[in-house]
Length: 366
Image (cartoon, rainbow, N blue to C red; front, side):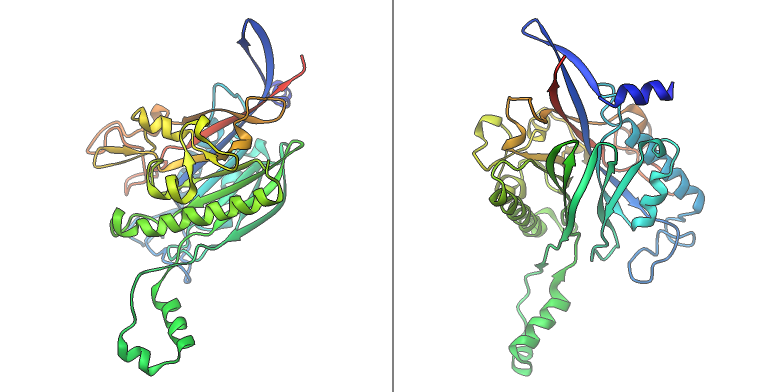
């Protein structure tokens, strides 16, 4: 059975009817999932992870950690089914403590057959959480990758007496240490999906801790950095195929997405170097990936350049997007009934976010 499935999925073919004519396509699923506090049980003296230890506030034991890995592996292996029987080719992840937890994750029985590669960097986030990209080695070959820091500051003017006491360059050093908001880097990965070059940016933008309005400036800065990365790739190749994915901590209609990044929710409105956000339509339908006070929003999104929404499927292009919200991922009782089934003191859940995905398809000869 495993041999048949592997052989069948080597080409990842599916069919559908278009104008009464049968066509065949290759399909790849691209996914993003906020793993929600994927910590090991060890205390890292350099980060604020104390609560995620056996003696910490979360009572994070080895048994809970292992169950968390099993839970995440089940979800990752199933995202995008049944339209594509194969698991995702590319998986962006967030809230990851270190590379070790990813090494443990890809060894889980449900993921081991996928032979997943890992691209990860440690970021300066005070909680010690990072972003990463997992990929199926048989379909994707990375050629370069880098972590691009988001350097932002709290707005605070030094006191007059402090300015008198120190030189200008010392003021800047003091400002760096005191006012900088340490957050996740943006991960840029370039490589080949089969024989086609593609670029992926994995994000986890600054949170709303402290209030949505008070922290909006930080996510708007993240959007502008994202746009700068995309612009730099398009200067090299105007037709570059670029996906930016992540937990943006903002929805499709917030300023960071609409203006910082410049994303459009309607294909016909996307300009020559613009970007398209298919999750805006899903939000307009009332869907969500995260709930707060019974209000749903789509913080988790996969956004793409115009080069991926062309109608010509002779190369890989966007087909459709979705939110993976199977019943087993949903809390079925209590105060948070209907919400994503997250970690709790009594059990290692899945995540407080639902994962999202898109399909990339290409027509193949019959």
